[in-house]
Image 1 (cartoon, one colour):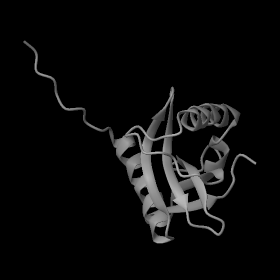
Image 2 (cartoon, rainbow, N blue to C red; image 1 turned 135 degrees about the horizontal axis):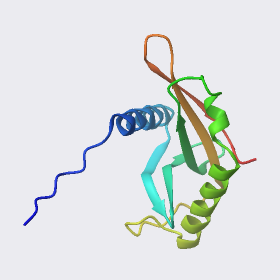
Image 3 (cartoon, one colour; image 1 turned 90 degrees about the vertical axis):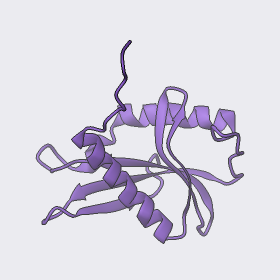
Length: 136
């Protein structure tokens, strides 16, 4: 008989979790309502699904991208055509289902995708920037 260990998060995953939490906190501070995090839609994972109160109000998927340095370019550059295509597939599946995994219907609002980039600044504290309508 084997005993399974609880899945432990790697250091990299923990930093990613902190980056995502920073974005969630910032959105909530602006009055956004977070509906889901790490939402599985088809073969894709959507980082954050939230309602932006606007004006105008929108249903938004927020893709969170993090990099520990700019050694290989800007964080924004990691949002490449492959990532966008994968994201579009997940969003299409979510909209096709019309609801969250728990059965809650998606709000009937205009839909958008925003990009949140997170990186450390001097001293190690994380900073975040939000780009609205990132797929346009």
